[in-house]
Structures are given as C-alpha cells and as structure tokens.
Image (cartoon, rainbow, N blue to C red; front, side):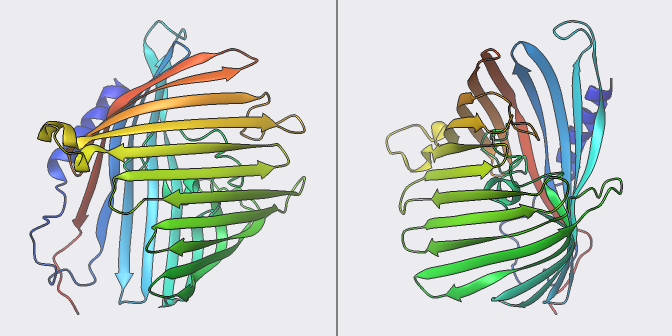
Length: 348
C-alpha cells in the first residue's frame, strides 16, 4: 500500500505540476522563488530480488537579488522489497535525505562562495549526475562512494568559480572544507579537498581531476580523474572517470546517443536514447566503506524514450561479475522533470 500511495503521489504531482511554457515571455520572471526537481519510479531486479523504488526530489530556489541564492534539494525515496526475498508481499519504508541546503554568494564569475550543506564536488557523478531526471542509467557507478563519504554531502564552506574564461577555454576550480556532523539529516564527515578542470569550448571537451583528504578516523586520500565530451554536431555524450582511494580503485566509461540527428528514421524513433556503460573495480586493503570487497566488473546497456522533454521512460539491463557470484540487473520505470514559480513575479 505504501508503494502505491507514493506512486500515486508522483502521478498526481505530474498532473498538477506543469513544466514552464517554452513559449512564455522570458522577460517576466524576475527574481522569483521556484520549486524545481524531479520524480520517478524504478522497478529493479538484482540477482532475482525485486525492489520497488518510487522517489520525489524537490529543489527549492530562492534568489535574493542577483547575487545571493538560497538553494536546497531533499530526496524522498521509497525502498520496498518482498518479505521473503523473491516472494511474499512488498514491505519497506520511505527514506528522507537533505542532500543540500546552502547559501550562495555570486561575487563575480571568478568567485562564488557557499556556506551550509552542499554536495561534495568529487569527480563527475556526485554533483552533476545523481538526480533521477538527469542520470542516463539509474544505478550509480561502483566507484561512486569514493570521495563522497559519509553521506555524499559536506557541512561547511566552499569556494568555486572560473580562474580563466576566454572565448576558447575555461579553467574552473572548487575548494571546500567540511566539518564533522552527526545531526539527523545533516550527517557529514570532516574532510577537505578540491576539484579543477579545463573546458575547451570549441571541442566541447572537459578534462579534470579531484582530490580529497578525509580528516577523521583513519585519514585517507582520494583521487579522481575524469573526462566529459560532447563532440560538436553530434548527439553523442561520452563520460569517463577513474577513482582511487585507500579502499580500492576503478573506472567507469559511459556513452549516450540520442537518435534526434539520425537521418532516414521515423520521427517516433528520434526520441530514443541509447546508453552503455562498462566499469571495473579492484579492492585494496580489504575494500569496504561503500565499495566491494572483491574484484568486480559490470556492463550495462540502456534504452530511454523521451515522451516529452520533461517525461521519459527508462530501462536498462546489466550483468555483474565477481568471485562472490554473477548477477543480472534489470531496471524499468519513468522519470519526470518539473519546475514552477512559487508566485508571479516581475523582473527588477
């Protein structure tokens, strides 16, 4: 019953929360608070064990003039599985997580200062690809826990911006410090680190790296190197990341291709996106802390269909290989992206 109540809430929300009209005037918004985010439902089968995962991820944006922004995202995810593993009724609960709640001061293009709870800027995945309405494959990479302990978020301060910005290249940087916190919904580890990348605008190529020093318990260093490329005049999207820490190292490579630019196919098929991912992880010092304790490889293939720009059907199949046993992983569901102002406003 909890599953269907949450799924019904998602569907009712889709009916009541309309996306912004692309034909509306762009001059009438002003500095207006808005609710954004996404919702979805994923049916997962991992090694024959089914789970139902409805979720809603509202994002609150409250601007104070043109230089200060309050932003927050909360995740409500239901996790329901059969009582006897592969048989019996579905039981579970809904988990709530405050992913970030921060104040941003936009001094200029070179400096943006942030205070509060923020997503740890490590690698590509945690900051950029975690939302259900953005990710191409619904399962996170095996190496995602590296550099994001303990909750994927930090409580403290962060500086970021463009150290250099020209018509051909941008050099971006991020530096942060997080304090240790055990407060409910605000858990974080004591850590410090940074991220830097170079973006070549004509080639649409970004190359970067991240570093983190974990400053509590067993102090460890974590590293990431990544690449993101959207070749000009194509609908191809390539992403690669290598991660290393005290507990192991590994990589993932993901490609996505939308058929929008493919000639001589029916218009109905132009809404299809094909996705593939390969990944590998090797444990060190026994693994653990969110990563496998044995060598693991996995391959995934996905097919997503955009019913509208804000509504899509998602599906994927994966095969995982390890010494503890191989497993098939299936995902099928939908995602919905919404955005609407909290009240009418005018440009000021």
